[in-house]
Amino acid sequence: MQVKDRVRELITAARLCYKRGLICGTEGNFSVRVKPDYIITTGRGICKGFLTKKDLVVVDRSGQKIKSVLNNNRNLPSSELDMHLCVYEARSDVKAVLHAHPTTLVAFTVCGQDLNYEILPEIISQFKSIPVAKYATPGTKEVRQSIIDIIKDNDVVVLDHHGIIMLGENILDLYFKLEMLEHYAKTLFIAKILGEPINLPSWAVQKLIKTNF
Ligand SMILES: [Zn+2]
Image (cartoon, rainbow, N blue to C red; front, side, top):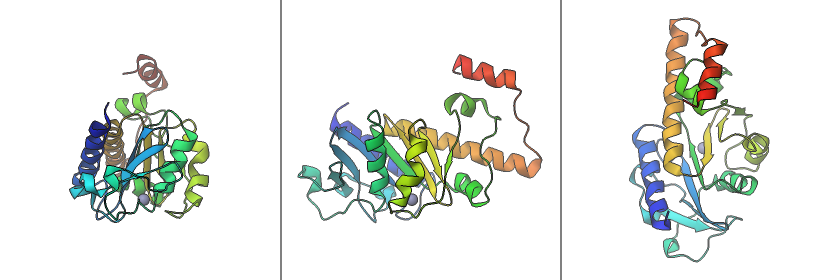
């Protein structure tokens, strides 16, 4: 995929996150790795609902802005960029990172409640688990410490009292997966109001994992 298409997808994913309430105000940050050393990311303090190409910043793997036609502005990269850099350092296979603040998923962490129930077929087959990283102050190096072990073999990390970070090949896929996870959290929340959620039997779970439904 060409760089311009990846930029277009980043903008679409960011706008959709805002539109669907997965971020609000100027929250959230998004990035794509376009070359081993080049990362295109969202600028600081910008509402993603109205994101355009001119709101993006191109940085190298250390987070320094580099010479690029996209950098013809005064934007600084997000204060949470280091979290993205940490992912790209740790996982050479990752080409896109999405960070959002989904209300229901985060509410579970605020109450210290487990998110790992085997109740929905789509979630069981798409996500082996939903790990939660210990609380770390956003925008600091503490975040690296909290996620580094988890991201080695997980493409999703919920951040305690904060948000979620999703990693993978394509930023639109990450957006769709985030929608699914927030939808799952809402289902779990409503199920818990109605009573105690009942997990699917282990044979059904195994079948879902085997058939890759
Ligand atoms: Zn955040």
